[in-house]
Image 1 (tube, rainbow, N blue to C red):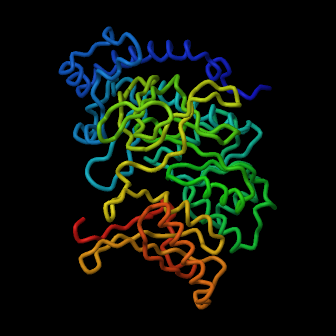
Image 2 (spheres, rainbow, N blue to C red):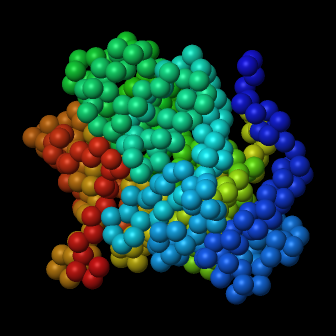
Image 3 (tube, one colour):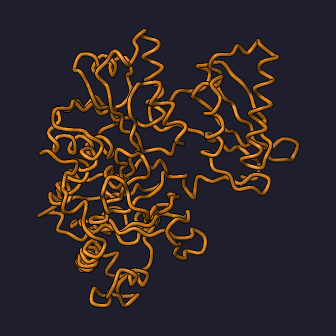
Amino acid sequence: MNTIYWEEKIETMSRKDLEMLQLNRLKKTINTASNSPYYKEVFNTSQITADKIKDLSDISKIPFTTKADMRSHYPFGLVAGNMDEDGVRIHSSSGTTGNPTVIVHSQHDLDSWANLVARCLYMVGIRKEDVFQNSSGYGMFTGGLGFQYGAERLGCLTIPAAAGNSKRQIKFINDFHTTVLHAIPSYAIRLAEAFEEEGIHPNTTSLKTLIIGAEPHTDEQRKRIEKMLNVKAYNCFGMTEMNGPGVAFECINQDGMHIWEDCYLVEIINPETEEPLPDGETGELVLTTLDREMMPLIRYRTRDLTRIINEPCKCGRTHRRIDRIKGRSDDMFIIKGVNIFPMQIEKILTRFSELGNNYLITLETINNYDEMVIEVELNNLSTDNYIELEKVRKEIIRQLKDEILVTPKLKFINKGILLQNEGKAVRVKDIRNNK
């Protein structure tokens, strides 16, 4: 297959043809969803039928679906297909409180998902000759089997290494000549540190491509990871409710993630007013599945904050792009009347080579006032070097204040003090009295 496209006809489809395909699939999705107890009630209350959807904008007539809706109808209240005849796999979210969100797949759904992941991997130059190592957790977490089946669909030799055990990951990379690694950003940094601890430089391995996602990260962090591991790192986006990985992916230009509009209908809304926002404005991402039979979701509020990039991409693909995820509307915290996202702080910290890669933001009440304390590990400086430390500290605080409009307390700690997480990094701890 001598082309840059996995499915050229679909990936380069004209806007008019793509929107016609979306409209036809949206109507089919509504008809399918009406077989579920949840959507049957929603459609009856809203008096919605597929015939009333004349163009894509008519989707606004349908109420949003939320995580709370899925939890309250746990486990199978949103299933539209025949569980006994067609249900072949269940995945669920990693929520630690209350009911998880559950997704049931048919074989068609799994085939469509695997194809989307293969399309993503092919887009960044991965071919069947590559060796793909997956450091995601398997089981109910979709990053494991999602990438596994996608890489196999592409024809890669796959290594289901699973999460953690960095020494074993490095041994596999060396022994099996891994060329592509999938890891969450915080673990990619941990792995780079493990390479250093083992006295191995990543440029002596065959590793050339890194797929990162699952947790928000800045472009500065991505560039640091690329330098540390001597790879090109491509950003990906997915979530359990939308299958998992493969919803959106960067192309080789690394300028926003193409969201596959033949399978997902994209909206951006103001998370507070729920009003639609024009392309280019940052808001909450709302998604509708267009190629899922067993359990379609319509107007699902992801809580992820991004914007649509509507300019043509140099790669020739016509599916619009979304910007890297800024954070989640429910990850934002307010201190001293200011709305702050953890990634704003990370963006500043990654500018300083003197700092390590691990940090923790603690919100606490001191003398009846809310305070923000940022603990960050040092890289090249000793905590005994007071003069140099104070010089760096003042500059970091100045830049943080310019970015977030609040002056935090900044504590330098030695490398290895903060807890290392094999899974998603914990960046904020809120222990305020008024929480």
